[in-house]
Length: 272
Image (cartoon, rainbow, N blue to C red; front, top):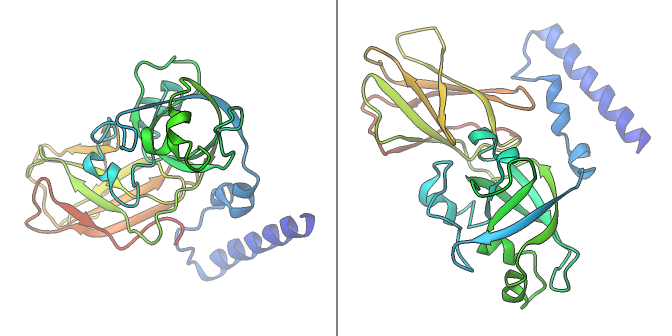
C-alpha cells in the first residue's frame, strides 16, 4: 500500500511538471486526487436510517424534486434512486450524487452494497440526521435473493452508506432544456455527470461572446440564466465539479433553433 501511495504521488508530480513545461493541462486539477480509485476503495462508511416509498418495484416518485423526470426509471438510473434527508440533499445541491448503501443488521439483508443516486428530497425526514428514503427497487436490492418483500416489510432499517463516484458507463453529459425557457431565459437540467455527480457552478457563453455568464441553481438539478436580452445560439456550457474542481466545456451543445423540452447531448463527461 505504501508503495502504491508513493507511486501515485510521483505520478501526480510528473503531471503537474508537464503542465508547466508544455502549458497544456487538459483541465487537470490536483484536487481530483480526492476522488481517486485509491480513496474510493478506502470508502468511509457511516450509519443512517432507511425507508422506501412508491411501488415495491418502482422508482419512488415520478421524477422527484431534482427534476430528472421519467429518467429515474430508465437506464442508467434504472430505478436505483433515493430521496434523502435535508442534511444530505442540501437544498438540491447534492442532486446526482452517488452512494453505496447496504444493510447487515436484519436477517433478510444480503450485506452487499448497492449504488444509488440522489434524485429526490425527503421533506418528512429529520433535518439533522442522515436518512435515505429509497425507491422500492433499491431498497429490495439490499435483500437476500427472494427476500425483497420481507425486507421491505421491516419498517425503518438501519443501513451503512458511503459516498462514491458516479459511473454511467460511457454516457455523455446531457442537457434537458426546461419548458419555461425562451430567447431571453434559459434553464436546463444537467444529466449524467460522472465522478463527483454534483456541480459547484454552471456557466453559459453565447456564440457572439467570449464572456462566460454564471448561471444560478434554480431548483434540484436545474440551472438557469435570466439573460435580460435575447441569447444568441449556439450556446456553450461550462461545468465545474463541486469536489474536484475540474471544469468541462460542452462547446456549442445548445444549437441554433433549440427547443424547450428538448434534450441535447454533449461529447464530454468527467472520468474520461
